[in-house]
Length: 265
Image (tube, rainbow, N blue to C red; front, side):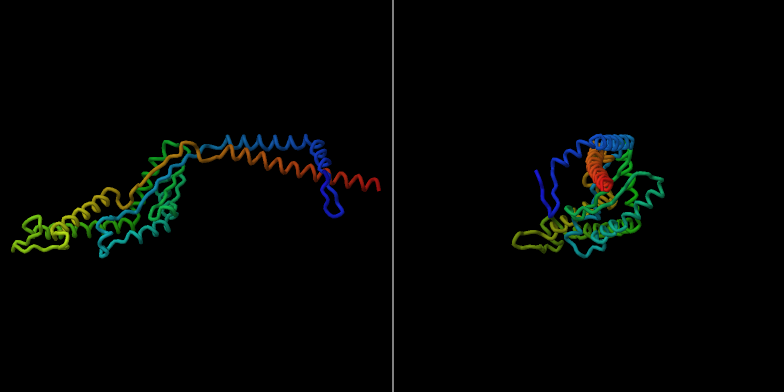
């Protein structure tokens, strides 16, 4: 089969003959490079990974229904994300840690962060992740916001409990006998409303006390090493060396043919 291009004609059979003629070079290069890639890949230590999805949670129940609260989770989240590298560096310096740690945004899960921890020892991942998250909870701005929110909610809880005590019965009657309804159509009493508000505040306080502002949503430990990617490395070594060796033999053939032409001339 001939391929014409201007005044030049390329015979595919001639190209095949070149490959067969120089097959020793091709096989040698491919074998050496592939073997070297395999040896280097298997000599590299395994790296394991644990991913933890976290949420900056400063209480959502009462906060979401009352815009006058003095703590804004939306301001803490981007700050943690922005300062992520500095937090990791500070943690490593303070603890002498050698683990690989990253804080990443999760585009598909707004409001959540991904904490990626890598280590050569798979059994140390959980401990390393827990220590780092405990350190994040001591981040000055987050710690301050947590304390402010706890103070605010505690004061609001005391105020709400005091308001509830001003009613004589669960239907919302004042001691004077007057019934105050938030929604007369549904018959929801003010006392019932305040009781529901109290429960939301208590849930928020429980969340803050339990998680310290950083709630773990989910964790996953990769069963196999994430690095090195041995099969990928060996495959890349094989194909790259094959392409380079083919290019090299054509280049050698080209220069040898030109040299013969010059000698014959």
